Amino acid sequence: MPKVEIYTQPGCPYCVRAISLLQSKDVPFEEIHAPRGSAERETARERSGGGTTVPQIFIGGKAVGGCSELMQLEQDGQLDALLGRG
Image (cartoon, rainbow, N blue to C red):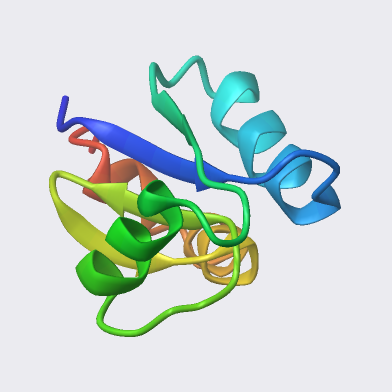
């Protein structure tokens, strides 16, 4: 399974929702705390090609977007393939 990384910020409901989806699918992931103004937030922005919101989600090193994009991948039946499950 490719490595899953998610950059988050405390109190972010979209971060909670994205993490909940990953947990419901028993997907191991690394949560990287990236509050506004932190070096981690800047890293997330650079890696994502300019995304300034959280969460920023990476699967196998590839930016997949935020919560909405993750949910759309799941709805479209593409998330499992990205996770190497089908």
